[in-house]
Length: 455
Image 1 (tube, rainbow, N blue to C red):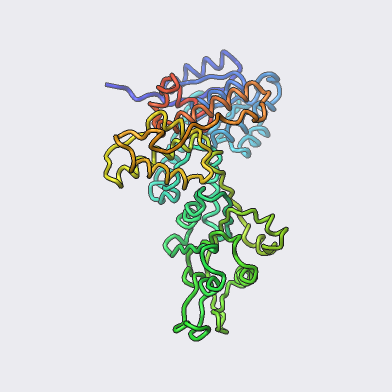
Image 2 (cartoon, rainbow, N blue to C red):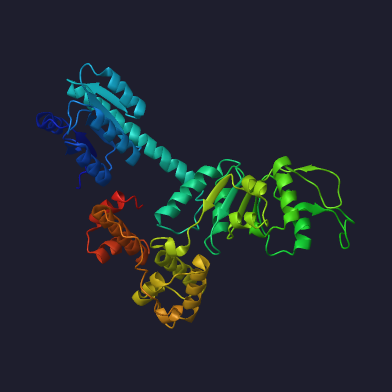
C-alpha cells in the first residue's frame, strides 16, 4: 500500500541548531531547508511549497531584516498563493506587522512554542487547500473562453491573462496583429468571458463591404431612404445591442463613417439613414486591424480622436514566427483535427515535417499553417505527414544576427527555456515524450517547467 507523499514545508533559517529542531518537530511534512535568500528561492521555484516559515534575519547581514523582507517580496511575487509565516525577534513587533502588511500569513516571535507554530502551519495548509479548491471549482464552472487558442509561448499566455482581466469591463478593445494571427479568436474570447456572453457576438469586416453599403450595414436605414430600401432595417450596431460588436479591419473604415462611429462611441445612440429618431444602444465594441494606425493618422486617413476612443485597451498579437514552439504545437493540433474531419484515422507529423514547420517563417501566420496542414492531411499517402506533403522546401537556418546576450547565466537559462518550449511543441505538449527527447527524467522536466513558468 502506497503512503500519501508528505507535503513540502520550506524552513528558511540560518541557525543550524534551530533549523534541525524545526525539521525534527515537523517531520510529518517533507521539510526543505534553506539558510539564505538565494537557496530559499531555488526551493520555492522547484518545489512550490504551500507553506514557508521564514526568519527575517538572514545572511549576509543576519542582524538586519532587509534580506528577509526581500525574500518575502520575492516569494509572494513567485508564488502568491504560498502562505509565509514570519519568525521575528522578541521585541520586533513592528517588523512583524510590516511583514503581514506585505502579505505574510502570520508571525511568531522567538522563542516560540513548537506546538503553537505547528497549529498555525496546519491552519495555513488548510487555508491553502480551500483557496486551491475554490479556484478549481471556479474554473470548472467557468467556460474556457480561449479554448480554440493553442499556445505555450510566454507572451501569448500573458495576453490570455490580459484578455481575461479586461473582458469583465466595458472598455473598448483594439486588437493589433498581422493577418492570420487570431484576432477574431481573441475578440470572441473577450465576449465569452464578459457579462455579455449570453447576448449576441456580431462581427463585420470593414474592408469586405463597399463604402456605399457599409454605412447602412452599420447604422441601418428607414424604408424609402434610398432606392431598394423597401423596409426599415436595423444596422449591425443595433442588432448587437446588449452584446459585442467586432469591427474587423477598422483601419479601412472610410473617414465619413469614422466621424459617425466616433459620435456613436460618445453618445451611444444611432440614427438610421433617412431617419431622425435617436436609438440608444448598449453594445461593447471590439476592433481589430493589421494596419499601423499611427501611420494612417499621420497620413490623414484615420482620425486621431477616434483612435483614442477605440484604444482604451490595446492587445498586440505577436506573429507566429515569434511564438516560441507554437508552430509545431499548432501543427499537431491541426493534424489531429483535420484527420478526424477527413475520416483519415490517426495521422501524425513525421520528423522532417516538424523540422520544416519549425524553419518556415509563416508570413500568413496561423491561417497559413492551418491551410498547409489541412492540405497535407488530404494529400498524404499514408498515416504520416511528410515535408513533401506540406509543400515546404528547405529553409535557411535561423537568422544569426540576433543580439548577443553577454550575461552567461541568463543566456544559458534563455537557451534552456527555448529548447524546452521547442521540445514540448514538437511532441504536441506530451511531457513524457518531451522528457525522452531532451534526455531528462519526467520529474526533472517538470522542475524545469516550474522554474521557467511553463504550464
